[in-house]
Length: 260
Image 1 (tube, rainbow, N blue to C red):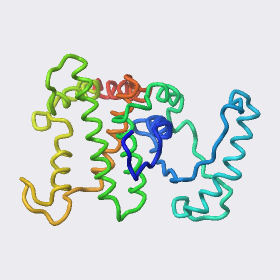
Image 2 (cartoon, helix red, strand yellow):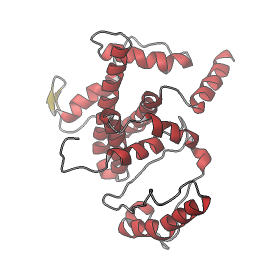
Image 3 (spheres, rainbow, N blue to C red):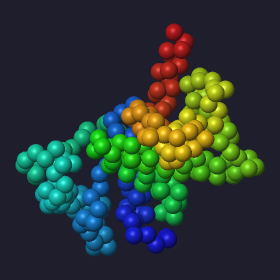
Image 4 (cartoon, rainbow, N blue to C red):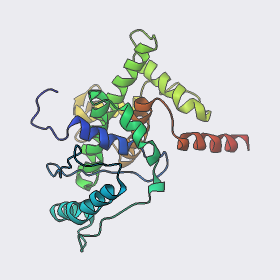
């Protein structure tokens, strides 16, 4: 990897975080991660048999008893700041497609820096969005993830035989693999890949552009909500090459609605 003073997480750590992030469902609860930088309890995997249920129970106990309280005390603002610190906030596993985590883990290659970079940007976007005053920066991080997804789709199109693919080709790819399944016709106005968001990105990052001079970013809170959900699903599909059960169930429900 190239040297950086912002080596926030290793490829293997990002691989795990991305596998968890991608296990969200289309309309389910968000899995908003807030990794604590530089806090890393180590487990000797060469000496620990993680197939042993007793060992797994000990590791889980350690995390809840020692690691989680240490993180909560260091970062109380991210956990509501409520005492006692020894009570981690757990969620219902049924909220997510956790049965796909191992598939994501196997499909995400540690040297697929572009995919990891897209997941990294989405996680940073989630972290920034925890603070109201940094929502604009959260959207900018989502723009980085959008650019990563765009580049990944262009590479996929080249492998499929498309020469010199561009934004319109990427928009068509998204329509074929996502929108078309729900009976959505391709809009003549927005045929390019995330066309509206790319225009807003230019206006956000360039105060003086072809759109004129702007004193602040012309973006809305809803932009992050929509873009973040869409990009998570796109990156998940690109990593594993298939949709989850939630997608197919949503498609079947949508088909019944159209028929009625």
